[in-house]
Amino acid sequence: MLKIVRSANSEAVVYFLSGRIDEDHIVELQAAFDAESGPIKLDLREVTRVDRECVPTLARWQVSGIEFVNCPAYLRDWIGRVRTGKKH
Image (cartoon, rainbow, N blue to C red; front, side, top):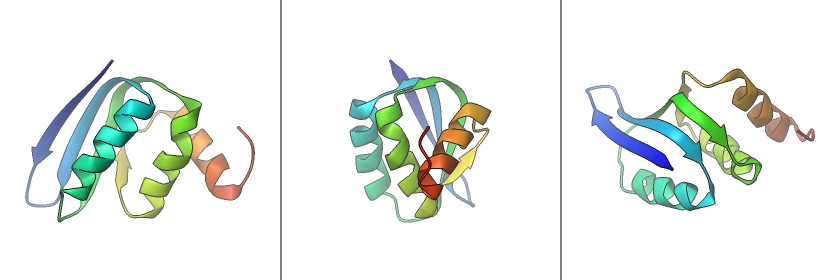
């Protein structure tokens, strides 16, 4: 289960995520991001687990300019490996 809370300020739209991210959530989040017109930040402080199949999409989001805030170290490592072509 993933809880998604959207908050907007003058700098960006911030999505606070809490729980587990799986492929269904990736589809839901992508639809939400597509509806936004300004900068987007993902606050991942409360994320407890991420399915490995989701990591390439997270890496693409980061490359496209979505800023990750409070990203757990293991997830930052996985995303870095995807971006450099290394296996995780």
